[in-house]
Length: 65
Image 1 (spheres, rainbow, N blue to C red):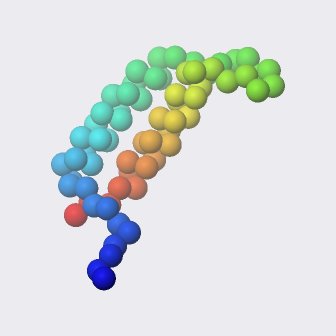
Image 2 (spheres, one colour):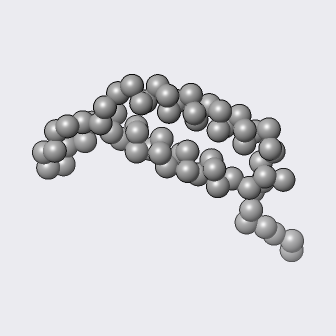
């Protein structure tokens, strides 16, 4: 059986993902993280910014074929 654990994306699709990610980043930069440091308090914006950061990183790691 011939298997591979790598999923490749096209160069064009990766560039589009990076472009849209950049645009989303510009929007999110307008808004601050929460300044409430209470225990277990996280705003939706903070969660979104953290998820976006991870998404951007993963897009950069995509393998191109």
